[in-house]
Structures are given as C-alpha cells and as structure tokens.
Length: 396
Image (cartoon, rainbow, N blue to C red):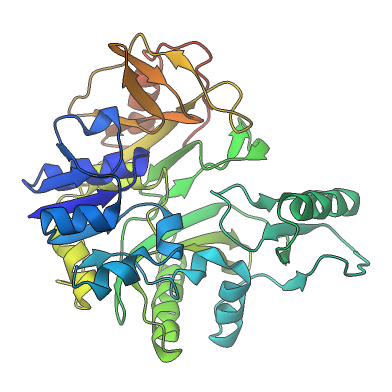
C-alpha cells in the first residue's frame, strides 16, 4: 500500500518501522536518518505528496498539522487520512475545550478555572498552569506554592500574551498514558504506557516533551477499565456534539487516591510512548489506521507481544532550553531486543549529527519490565556524542 507519512521525529520513525515491516511502501515528507531502508523520501508538502503518489493512506504524526486542518484538506480531495479533523483536534489544541467536554460528559477530571490576561486573582493554594494551545508538550507549569503559581502565570502570558490560561487543581499520584484508536464511534485501546516528562531524575526540573516511556504498565484492572471508559465516553461525547473523532486519542491520567482523573487529551501518538507501543505491536497497524479513517475499525482488540519495552531518550545536555549540535560517533546496533529510534538527528558531510533537543529513543525489550529497562540502558551506554544526556530512572 502507498502510504505518505507526515513528520520526521522519533514517533514517526516508530510508525514507519511498524508499517514497513509489513511490506507497505512508505513515503516520507521529512528527512530522518532512521528512515533509511524503510521507504522513500517524497516532496515536503503533504498535499502535493498525496497527489503525486496517488496515496492510498496519509498518516499524520505531529499535532500541529492536525490542528491546522491537514486531514480536512486531504479528505476534501478524496484521500484517506489517519488523524482527526481540525475541529476534533481541539481536544489537544485547546485545553479549555477539553475541560468543557469533560464537564459536560461527566469525565473524571480536576477542578479548573479559566484565566485571562488582566484578571484579578486571589489564589488560596498552588494551581497547575496550562497554556490554552499547542506547546509541544511544554506549556504546563506545576508550581509548589502560591508565589510560584503567580510566577508561572506571568511566564505563560509572556510566552503567549493573547492566549487564555487554564488553572487546574494540582492532583497527586502516578501518571498513566492510555491511548486508543477511534473511528468516530468506537475506540480500541492500546497497552497502558507511562511517560516521564520531567528533565531530571526523580521527576525534577522543567517539563519536556518526554524523557522516556515504558509499556505495558501494571495497574489494577478496575483502574484500566475506568481509563478505557473515559476514552469511550469522550468519543461518544464528540459524536453527540457533532464532531466525530477519528484517529489516535491519547488520555493522560493521574491515578489519585479517589481513582483515575483525566489530565489531558492528545490527538496523536505520544512521543515517546509511540516507540515502545509500536515496538510491541504484534500485527500490521495499517488496517487499523485505514479502519479509523473510513469510520469502521477492523476488530475489537489489537494484538501485542507479551514482552515489555522501555524507551530511554538521549538528549542534548541543554535540553529543553536548546538542542544539541554534535557528531554522533557511536550507536548501538538494532537487534531483536533493542531498537534505536532517531528523533533529532541529521546526516551531512558523511557523518551522523545530533541536531535536536531529544536526539534518540533507545528502546530495550525483555520478558519483564526490569529486563527491558536493563537492555535499554545497555544500549544508552554505547551512545557517543558530545553533551549526550539522559535520565537514569526511566521505568523505576
């Protein structure tokens, strides 16, 4: 099948590998050295690429083109596209939209209020501060005091003066990522995963796009059932509101003492959650992507390996403030129990370069969570470029 893949990061490398290993002809709109051997480069503009190739499916990886309406434009010209419409993508592009949906449809979530620039506030406790809009996973502040909340609000309005801000109750507990593939009516969940957002060990430092992820995560069946029900009710709620959701629905949950509560929705595969999930997927993902695009999923359950996976992100030393710029002189070889996903690399002058904030996603597999974690860190130890940095506690 002729497939156009939009995006060039670690998530897209994982999607490309999962599709290519089932014999699909994947064509890439972006450069990524990890794509070598998995398909062919095409023109950068996704619409032009779809027309040029008479694409049978366009898979959109990043959130920005979804929010900008790429799927709407593709469907208007008769192309099948995996991803939500711009209207449905508001579940990620507007946290206030998501909070409204959750309130109207009874989804368990944190108390919240909308703040606009110039509002007079009297804060009685710390609040989580969230920019209303796409922020590449970095538009959230989690202050630990009222003064820090006020400072975070100032920073949010300085970053985007015209945006509204969501103040949200600060919840406590471990986080869980539960993703599902939706066709507008039904949603079929993937394995539960866990991202590690903070830059440094012990969940310290600034929020990032994600420093590593594991799958599956062991949680009580009742907890997982509640998370699955939230995805189901969200999809049904969107349909009832006249905005059917087709694509990947990513629910970020906090597992509180009173049960799972929804933190956010994303409308695409998480990065780096996609890396362990696609590595563990034990079937061709393309029929599921097509089924979502057509409005009819092909089954009731996705098939996954019984193994565990742990993805450790190797970044530049100054991430998230700035990206890396160094020659990569050594990488571990891919094998049955290790895959190196390229997130921020480029190839020029005959050398491989680290050129992004998050550079690599070294993903280990094993019969247990600890075995997968050990294999991932063995691979990380073989990475060589100036300033290479990573967390040492992914999966703990």
